Image 1 (spheres, rainbow, N blue to C red):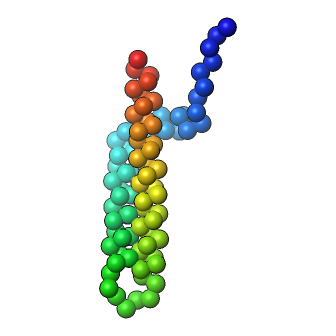
Image 2 (cartoon, one colour):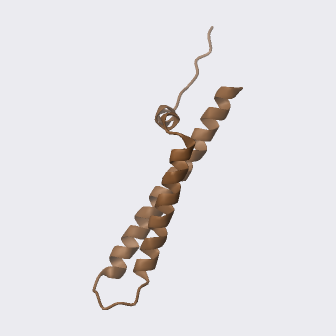
Image 3 (cartoon, rainbow, N blue to C red):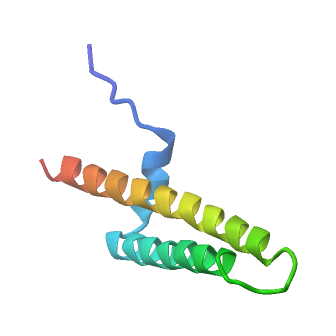
Length: 83
């Protein structure tokens, strides 16, 4: 009986992206995260700037974590194929 290989739904999506592109996206979203935190902590008289900065920081953090996960999955997929 032939053995069926189970392929995850995200493997095909992640395999299309290069490691360099994923690392660039990680760097970009890390910068967005830090900019949002900086903007949220500014002492200013503009109402709501801390909330906007916090929202940008949280979004940057989430997308940074997603890109980090995709980078690791991409590396594992490529390493598995080389064996």
